[in-house]
Length: 95
Length: 432
Ligand SMILES: Cc1cc2nc3c(=O)[nH]c(=O)nc-3n(C[C@H](O)[C@H](O)[C@H](O)COP(=O)(O)OP(=O)(O)OC[C@H]3O[C@@H](n4cnc5c(N)ncnc54)[C@H](O)[C@@H]3O)c2cc1C
Ligand code: SF4
Ligand code: SF4
Image 1 (cartoon, rainbow over the protein chains, first blue to last red):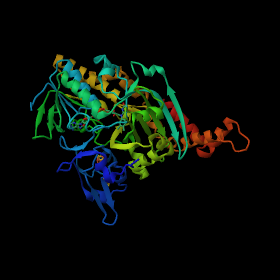
Image 2 (cartoon, rainbow over the protein chains, first blue to last red):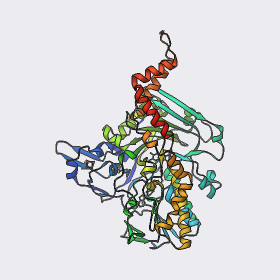
Image 3 (cartoon, helix red, strand yellow):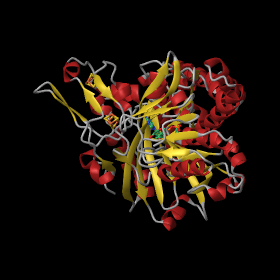
Image 4 (cartoon, chains in turn orange, blue):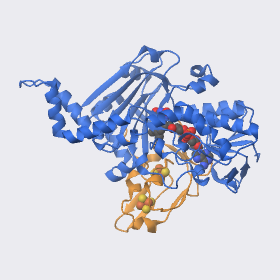
């Protein structure tokens, strides 16, 4: 059976991606974060930390709107955390 | 789009749809707002819909009417280690006839059905409608602002049924801004296509019978467990992982899920299956002590938004509590409207109704369950003890056998230690 590979999340789950991000974070705060729990805990792999550039990367396209990052981040890094505009974002068909 | 109603419900999950259904049936002009393109589009869960007598009272033909997958006749609990598994199983004919004890369902289908029933009863269902803020007059809620043409929808009372994060309850000042990562879990699930005959053969089922399996020891020591539920032509397989523990482990949910799916016992059950959809969602598992305030002036909170969900390790109950709380919120609003008083005090009847029902009674009964679920040995050492014990009991290798009691004492001592065992037993005893 095919493994769950979040690199190919668009083959696994449907999305209607909005132009405008529903989650925005302040990368400055992530730089001094002592756990970066979002990177490993996000079930869609939306967060990537580059140790070399000391830079947090975030893509909202494949976000499953699960809420884990909202809970795991205790540093107040989000300047915006809301759900996508109506009709946009993840679209489960069968689950 | 109409701009004012007698009541607004935020979120068309089980809690919201039930609330809108209840209000519409009492003749209240209610709007049910959902951010998805249809109710259920954004929703996932493990897969077990427990019996809901309150909904059966509304729909006496519930099991013929609702889009259910299979009724569950067999429940099992499996302790897994790297390559072994020990299963306890319960099955009864009593779960094989109406009123069925529980069903497997798929949310995009089930939630859409309940919202449609609310619409048929007279509720205005507005989809693609994300609520972004509340309209406040002083402290009193007077409606919502939606992310659609800067729209405002006014109503003298709002029911927040927007799920676990409830940004609506937050904006009404009913919950703390921080949600505790140790009281929340994330569920990840793979929906796997399997032909009907394969499901029936592998799980020993006939007709529309279904099986539910819970797993412990399959999370590499992270607090949580696994589940498998049989649908008609697919199975739902996934993990529930406590967020604090997951964060500390440095593991990712999908790597843990893949490892679970590849466990030799699971791989056999799922052989030839095709991955259909991957989904994830947070579960409130903090229990009674993690609940927010349930009402304010012009606002009530229902379902996951109110933290009405609990896990005991054997069962996860959420949808039934959501539906029941939604119906009680509707009842409270309908009564309060009669007296023309929608203040926090008048709406406080809602809490009394919940206290009088199984919702808060069960939540209180299992108040200490979160503490038990924080025993880390449950997720590694104990499954190992059980599987090792069983292996020693069954293994025949020419060496003399030992008494079961001694075997157990020996294995436990090696893996856990007596003092820890006693402490854990005490915690567990107090929780259930
Ligand atoms: C992995 C997993 C397994 C589970 N297993 C079980 C189980 O086996 N049995 C069981 O009974 N329970 C289970 N649960 C719990 C159950 O799913 C929840 O308790 C239940 O769905 C709660 O219903 P609700 O209506 O309160 O919230 P939700 O189902 O979350 O519904 C909230 C609705 O509000 C909408 N919404 C949110 N914000 C907005 C907004 N701002 N504007 C407009 N709409 C909005 C959402 O799109 C959604 O439709 C499980 C949960 C998970 C995650
Ligand atoms: S947990 Fe918060 S602060 Fe830390 S890296 Fe993630 S988003 Fe940034
Ligand atoms: S909501 Fe869930 S899927 Fe989306 S970015 Fe946060 S953790 Fe990842």
